Length: 238
Ligand SMILES: *Cc1c(COP(=O)(O)O)cnc(C)c1O
Image (cartoon, rainbow, N blue to C red; front, side):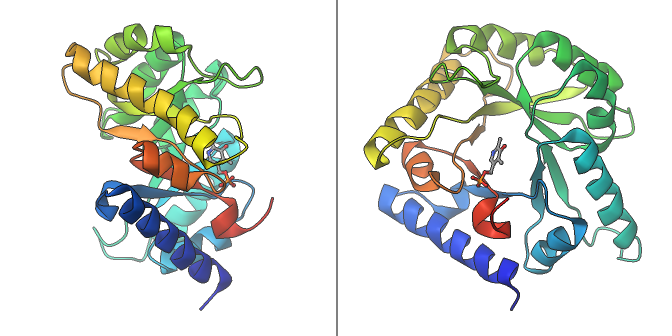
């Protein structure tokens, strides 16, 4: 077994243990493998070990990998292997077209202008782009993301855009000193997620709460994460 395959087993075991500790169904948490800075061969190793959803931070690097994987999958039977690519890094206006044309999800939307461009530029032959709004739950200064008070209004606007499907919220809390402190930060995102759904103003409820990385996935799952984004524990240090 390759190192990446072994690492994936360990991460899946961590997710299962965290779900058990939290009294949650392990099937309620998806694993996004964050492959930023690693090459297409590393992604292929993960695919061979049964991983299908990948996250990329840098748009150009992500598109290169998407195209590389697509060309090496060209010989596989139709319906055989559908990878799912998530853009999880900041999206500038001049990169929206690349994102709209190549990715399946964008988790880092925090401005209406970017959402509108993504919607307009989504090619009509593709399914709608799946979107999470990035929320800055702790006011961390060097981070993109909406202030919690602004999320509901943007969610309502994004839900109207024809090229997009609003799925949920994503947050990257600051590192916390211990499990309890990490849970408290993740719980802010969960509370906001619940408040938006309880407001009852969206055409379809949010179903995705993207929280948790290598260091804090247990706390995120405890707080209610439905998708953990894990890089280091799968691919190694960057
Ligand atoms: C890099 C990154 C991750 C993965 O972080 P690790 O600590 O390597 O697991 C998850 N989410 C985002 C937004 C990232 O930029």
